[in-house]
Length: 269
Image (cartoon, rainbow, N blue to C red; front, side):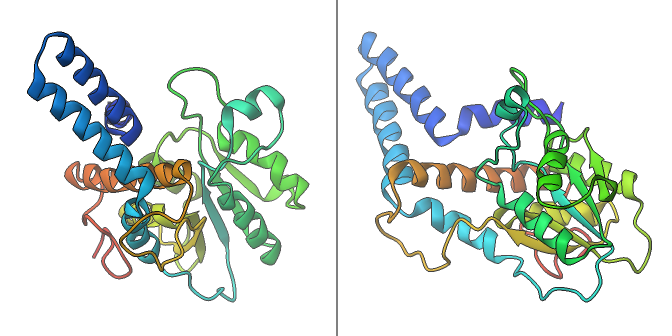
């Protein structure tokens, strides 16, 4: 139920969708001559779109998430690598049979690079199908084709195909792998996603070394007009808002123990 409620809620509050809903409310208000409601709906819709596309708001919201877990030096020995799904174009790959990457495709590329660097490490690809409407191929279904093309053999891969969100990534991967004490496992996901992911893996007792990738900000953004094009700015804002909402929802539901997990203050700290 949590999964479906979270998806429906996000459909409603995603900045672009919320602006469209507010514009619809404003249109209906105009038809029934409710001037104050019209002004509120249209004005708020304009404010959301303007801040999301023309300003650095998205980058300012995203940057603290990306800075929370700095990337550490490479360990001398790694027993396994866990890469979280979200890096593949599932609907496209389902039809075309390739391995097209999405905006978070750095996750998969980085995991393949690490796998080549640590030739004895196992590689867990965690991610099932997440489409609520239509067909799509889960990352754990697609990734083996990409990894094979990049020189990582199938015998090293462990495929977790059931998870639909980060909570399930952690729980199902923990049950599938059963890591032993003293082993070193790298956790690979987008930098903005690492606080929530790391806290959830800690919560299920799977100790990992965070390996953030897929950075979206330079770390030098200030308050002002966006230096990116409007579409990318809107996407950055949506990503940031979604991740912060995810942290709040996971904290309120008890899935993580801190609103903003970080090194030394994760779910167990």
